[in-house]
Amino acid sequence: MPAMTMREAIRTALAEEMRRDPDVFVIGEDVAVYGGTLQVTAGLWNEFGDERVIDTPLSEVAAAGAAIGAAMMGMRPVLEIMFADFIPLALDQILNNAAKMCYAYDGEMSVPMVLRAPFGAGVRSGMHHCQNLEAWFAHIPGIKVLMPTTPEDAKGLLKAAIRDPDPVIFLEHKLLYGVRGETPEGDYIVPIGKAAVRKEGKDISIVACGAMTPKALDAAKELASSGIDAEVIDLRSIRPLDENAIVGSVRKTGRLLIVHEACQTGGIGGEIAAVVARDALGYLDAPIERVTAPDTPVPFSPTLEDFFIPQTKAIVERAKGMFSPLWKSV
Image (cartoon, rainbow, N blue to C red):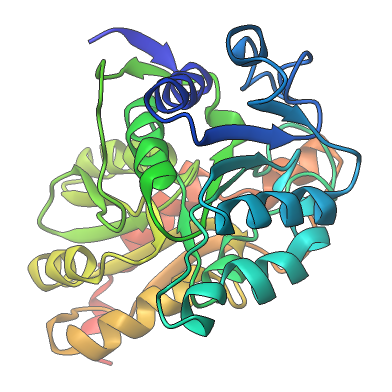
């Protein structure tokens, strides 16, 4: 398998799907000649031209409305929003149109569109360009929410999202665009709603998503030196959530540590904890723990931003604390 970056894997998936299906097109601000704000769509305009790689005015709500309308008429648009922080500008279109059409028309109409957007902290872009809003979107019935962490998954999940009959929000962490990995060639699909076990273990389950997955894997290596065998689960899909993978892992290990970059209150970690409390409470040897960002905006100061983002050290320390004899007396 050829090695490519996650940015290249996403671009490859877009090109392959556009060649496969003439109804697939790309739309968004600066996606054509410029190649996208973070150069993900670079080169697509050269191959597919103005009718299939379309620059929009500086209006997220207009771009989303155009994509939703096209999808309702049978096209398969891939809408790029410059940063996930700007998706709320189009939230009325997404919440009240894209997400509801299948329900409103009793399945006779669908909105097969993908909304792609970079997200996440760590690139010194300040509070308006670095937020983690996946739990917002996952709260909307009718919307699927995906967060790939490897080039292989980015390609396979995006191709699955483009072919899906429902609207999909596809979140790409900015720090992962340059991550390089082996990526299958050809028509490679990753099923939506299936988590990936990145490392098997027997002592504790670490459930992570986005850029926290590599940090969870680094933490697992450090924990191994202390005799703790951690299992690391990469969610990949925020909605639908792979409850079976999470519950099965916790029933095996007896401990659950949830790691996400989003702020703690209302984060997806709370939903994961609720699922485990319902289906695996009797298997727990320690209370469920979370490592998350604090409930503040993302700081612009590099020092404060690094403090804001959950780090490997924090994951290791929280995991070790879950093996304290004090828990067994609770």
